Length: 125
Image (cartoon, rainbow, N blue to C red; front, top):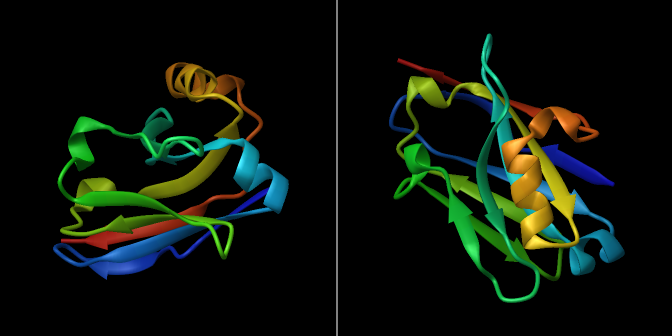
């Protein structure tokens, strides 16, 4: 079970921090990623972080602006989003898979994943 939260309305150039809370077993045993879906667009991978070695991956459009991290005490994966742009407006979702490669398959074929509830991020110009 994953619970995404932290979305909101922010002006361009502003910041938000999203949280993906997980159960202990889900957090410890899975690679966790953030995805987003903008109106009228396909769902896309944004960032992911490995549970074993901390490897991270970012889509090119957010590199240098977004930072993903794991809070082991709170069993939460955080997505710090800075220098937000209107094109970052989307519903943000988190996903988990036991392997890095498995989550990359979700990255490639997001329509095959059983998605939970996301959190809305709106960036005004």
